[in-house]
Image (cartoon, rainbow, N blue to C red):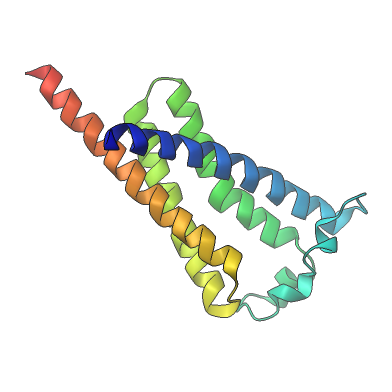
Length: 149
């Protein structure tokens, strides 16, 4: 049962974080260049980035934050999904582990400079993604060893 839960949560995180981070990242990047009917800037002004120890150029708008979100969270989860649908579960879980680690580091960095509840929630999701993907990968290896005997 725990194995099934681990596989399901790993897949959920690949979908959830892969889609949300990709859509939000592109949306944030677009908000830096275009006036959108519903702009990311309506919810989060670029000034929220001021405490971060990054170059001022990266704090002028949300382009770089969106690019980082897309690259750090969206892409690894999307890659994990592609491998999952191709039946390469071991590789998919390794990408899920990578995505979980990246999410943990991303949110820890953010929380040091911009403490907020949403980042704390995503830190928890990152830990759960790392644990579930690791557990699912371990179960996959045990099943493979068992089947090979």
